[in-house]
Image (cartoon, rainbow, N blue to C red; front, side, top):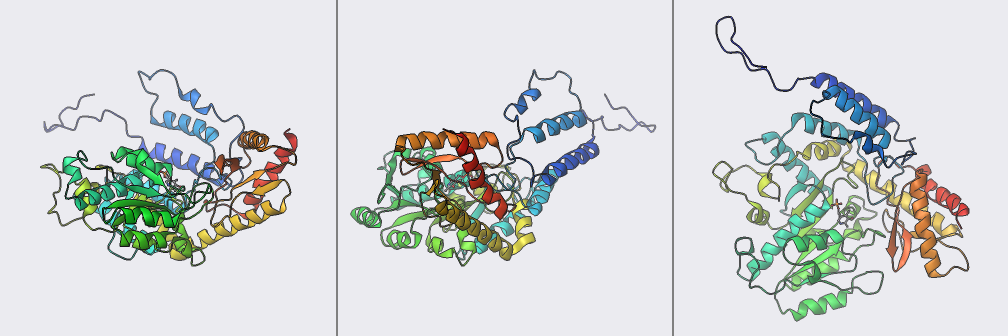
Length: 485
Ligand SMILES: *Cc1c(COP(=O)(O)O)cnc(C)c1O
């Protein structure tokens, strides 16, 4: 449709190519979202028949669209029926947090206001909100030094971002600007970790050209715990040459922690960069009851964590902190005649991480911290740690269940056992049991392999989770086990 002229002959705007039915679409989305959220406490985690829900949305690309109201209504209908209730109270798989009411509301606003949190000039609001959010997070975790920080899409991208800073530092120690000239001609980067190291940190090293296989795992035993004496010897043998040390604060199978403070003693003495992956475990810092687990984290060179896990903000959100002001900017600054340069007095978060254009994740982070404060998050962490301890005691009491590791935080690693079965038969039985639990759908948690044994590892990270929800893990498992040979 083409615009014409008004009665005075002035041009009127060309009509928009798409109709504006925002009001109706937003009302519809809000209504369906409200219904979904209201039923989260009672719905089955995996509704019966789920698994092929999206197929009814397939078919060829429509030549002529059905319109926004119809399309969104159809999507809402199918999606709410098909969604695994990952934001509900009985989803214990992976380490999947829910969304607090404040975070969800704020995240809707982030979409409505559609701020690009890359450059101050484009969104002073997004930039200023992220500055506040990052400083509140640093405060929450006791990172009181001068840290540069930013929000990322998750812990994987936060690992990548922080380790890119570590790589730059390592090059500088050799007198080389690796971001300018690459790693060619340099020796292999020495990287040390315990057996707890997360696959995403290893993946980041691969992406950065340091290489996945460079990581030396200095495991004390098959539980993955760090051999500190070996780390000391390996660093001493480098004779002052720089290295990167990866600490894991909260291992995914058991919630185990590397001894960060004692690692910091060594990295400070031997010219090594200490990186701490605390994707969920960093939240131990929020409670005086668990803060000892992350003792020394403020002495690291870089620290990362997730927002979409224990902070309970919607996907996707993580954060990275680097205790070398300016270093992230040196790695990630993106120049162009139309972009803010190094002299810009305002922060430009697009120059601190891999992405240029960025969603304003600070909306949700700011809102949830403003809504519940330090005390709210302390209560949340202590509630979950208490639930994990309660569940671990139940496992110890049940003759048919076996606790496979200490549960220092919010993950409980255990398995089903039966007298007279070999280890292989138990692995096979627990694998089948795990599949049956997911198909049943009343509670949801996955299997892993811990010290060579197939095990369950429910993780408690959702603000909605109660004692009754956690009790159902053992109730459902034992009930299903009774039916399985
Ligand atoms: C979950 C997790 C990650 C990866 O986080 P994503 O948010 O999925 O990218 C990294 N490290 C640890 C220890 C984790 O638990």
